[in-house]
Length: 413
Ligand code: HEM
Image (cartoon, rainbow, N blue to C red; front, side):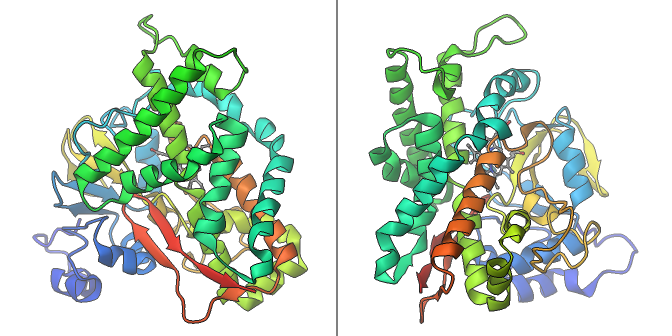
C-alpha cells in the first residue's frame, strides 16, 4: 500500500485523485475485484498494479489485501503456515458454503488428498486422453463449420473443458453439463453474494447425489472411486463424507471454470493479430509454447485468497493475523522484474515464468489437462479454419471477479 504519511516522494500516478481519474476508484487503498471498471480495464489495471503497487488493500465487505508482485506472491503461496488456505479462498465468503478439499485446507491434510488425486491427472494419465479430446474438438467443430460462423463460448469454449473432464475424468452424464456450468459460473460471478451461495449449493447437491449413486455401483478404478475410498488424516480419522463431496466440487470448479477463458482469448488474439495467426499456421510447432504464453497473458484465475495466521509484513505493508490476503497470480505473471516486455504477447518467449496455475502446495492439479485441451483446440482449429476473424460489429464480452471469464465471442470464417 502507498503510505502517504512517510516523507518519501509520492508518485503522482498513485495519488487517490490520479487513481480515481484513471481507474474510476482508488485501487491502492480500496480495490474491488468485482468492480465493473476492473472488468473493463483488466489489462491496464494488472499492468499498473504489478509495476507500482506490490500490495493493495480493499475495503469491500470485511476487507482484503492483494499481493501483486511475483517474488512476494511466490513467497506467500509457498509459506502456507503463515498464509493458510484453511479459511477459504474467496474474499467475503458467503455464509454457509462448505469448505472445498483440497483447495481449502493446509498440509498435512492437503498432502493426503493430493497424494491420492495427483495420479489421475498426471502427465502420463492425461496423455492417454489425447485422442479422445482431439476427437471431441473435431466433433464440436463439425457442428458449426458449415455455418461459417459461431458464438465460440457457448458452442465450443464451455463445452470442450466440460466434455474433457466429464467424459475422461468424472464419468458424469453429459446432459447435466449445461446446468453445472451455469451453477459454477453463477456461483462465482453472480452480483449478489446470497445468489452465489445458492448456486454453489446447487453444485454441491448435484455432485453429492452423483457420488452417493456411485457408492452403490461396482468400482471402476477411476477418480471417483479414489475419492470414495478417501484418505486417513494424520490424527487417524477417516475423511468424512462431506470432504469427499467437496473434493468432487473443487475438481469440477477447476475443470470447467477456467480453460474456456484462455481458449477464447487465444482465438480472439489470433483473429485480431493476423501476423500472429500466420506465424502459427506456418509453424505449428510454436503452438506448445504459445499455449504457455496465452496462459500467462490471459489468466482465468485472477487471485485466490489465504488468511494470515500471524502478524506479517509484505513488501513493507503490515498485515495482521486474521486478515484476508489474495495472491494475484494474474499480476505476478506479468512482473517486469522477471521478464522483458511483459505487456506483450510473444509466443517465442523462452522459459515463461508465469504463475497462472498457481505456486506452492495448491498448484493446479489440472494443468496437464488444461494444456492438452488448449493445444488440441489450437492445432485442430487452425487446420480446419485457418482464415477466421471476429464477426463484424461484435466484440467479446467479459466478466471478472477473483476469476475472469469470457461471456461471448462471435467468430466467422
Ligand atoms: C487454464 C486452466 C486452469 C487454470 C489457469 C487453473 C488455475 C489454478 C490455480 C491458480 C490454482 C491454485 C490455487 C491456489 O493457489 O489456491 C489451481 C488449483 C486447482 N485447480 Fe486449476 N486451473 C486450470 C484448470 C484446471 C482443471 C482442468 C482442473 C481439473 C481437472 C483444475 C483443478 C484444480 C484443483 C482441484 C485445484 C486445487 C488444488 C489444491 O488445492 O491442491 N484446474 N488451479
